[in-house]
Length: 371
Image (cartoon, rainbow, N blue to C red; front, top):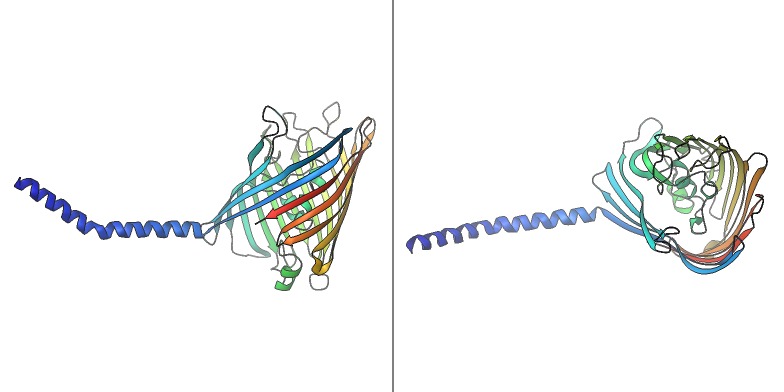
């Protein structure tokens, strides 16, 4: 009995003297959890719409989830961060047709370097990352809510892919007034640059061959003091289409953009061969040549938060024995009702010279919710 009493006393003493230790451990855990979540950012973006139109000689009338993104970003220190973005869409094929589907849009590590030479705030992304072109264009033409950009619509470019990329502004940044009133994205004083190596099929495709593509963008702001909103850009891509036959997939595009407080104008000229999927080929498997252009404009009606926009696309694929041209006409009006949230009314019509094809069109009401 005495032995048991002594043992009990020893245990109580150990517990007593370890209470501060337990409390300290609990405090450390709470601090660690707080520090972890205080350096994490959560955001979302949703495109909801209603369309009434005609496609492939069939009328349709539907409410829809056009797209949704859920993003978590974690900052580890001043140099290292990570991003995880889920893409929410509707499954359009297979046994799950019609189901809401989750897939990855981005998942990468980003490492920021100190500025050096002419490169301002450079960084590297590794993983499922941005590709150089569409991320840049969509910061000028903000109407991804309406539909795909010109090169993506014609199966030439993708916004994200597995790979590694280098990104930087050139020669410092524009002043705060420009970034506040016009555009804070890619606001390099002399322009910006991006280059990367990628699988090539885009974030929603499996890699079907061993080839990799190189994609790049160089943007120059030639008159940053006189016409700060004027930029000249080149987009280039070289590689193979994403199938086992590995057809050529090469792209070159010139892009001119002008941004001001009340007006945005862009023009794109494109020339290339092949496409992402490797399906733009002739009977011998040689890639078809492509050319085309696109014009976009947005007029902002000041304090009303109402904006008018329009776009015209022309895209020609040289097929033997005939060329096939696709045209698109887009016109719309938007209302910014809260920060980056907007309402949209638009009309979209597409035409094709392909024998047997029909014109497609729709009227749309859509909502973008961003937080």
